[in-house]
Length: 420
Image 1 (tube, helix red, strand yellow):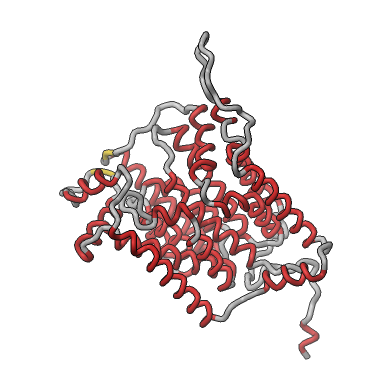
Image 2 (image 1 turned 90 degrees about the vertical axis):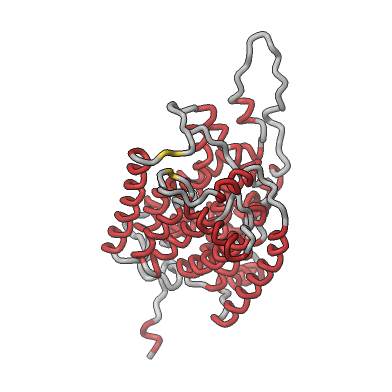
């Protein structure tokens, strides 16, 4: 009786995702991929040739011989990035063409198809969290090393103001003040927020891939990230903004009316998340919820950002100035921050390009959120040059923590794809 329902499709769709096919819209993956890979490749120019962008955007004074590094001198990651990309993409090509040896083909198929039970996933996640909290709790007694700490500490002594008439990270101040009151240590709640970010990443990955194993892999990737571990307990650069933003994406599926609320909380945690609006809208519109829910969620989310922007212009004073004109040289210099600030995150450096290509291949099979992750990754990379090109702000390494999070989720999306 069961044999009547067996079909042999030309392409194997993404497992457990009902409405992921896009038969009449195959142009969208191409558009997203070409835009995203362009941003990634531009960012990797400074990985391969660290001084090229610097020399190209340096002004020369007539009559003075400048002392500059060689523009085409390769960086420490250049060989690793090139070799890893060639090997990974070569294996992927052979795998899709069924040209790999049988034992390798079976091994990769088992990895892609592997799943853990709900009980096992719970135990593994619990163990990972215990290891993480136990390892990071030693930092709670350490003295904050960042220069911005004194400013934050002094501001907390006079917070909350009455009335609140400035556009500041009041949500962050609330949690930091609460941490000091409840625990006598202003780093406890930041640590708990970082642990909550790991949990939220697990559930978001599990939801969009329908695989618990993919969620666990995403958590492990974040836990080994150097940039994440540097800023996970800091008071100066907390992860509250990232937590609320990632939570807003998860709530699109679990309880969509609260998604805009979570996004709203991320902005007074750090105003930079307002720039994530296009990425959020794309994620919402490509999600597997009803059209009505998409329009309402996207509309409310966009309305929140617009209302907040008008309020800041009309009645609130800001603490950060902006440049009046676009600075092209500073814009291109912004792309160099990725190579420098993530130089200790080997997985991101070595596998970012293969990941983008892999997400593109998955997206062509109809997995919409492969496109969403490409948009999120390229958007995070584009934030740095936009900040330096349009404002007087400088790029700081902690702003790349969301990039690591979405890189981890992207790996999970790849693992969720069953290969033929």
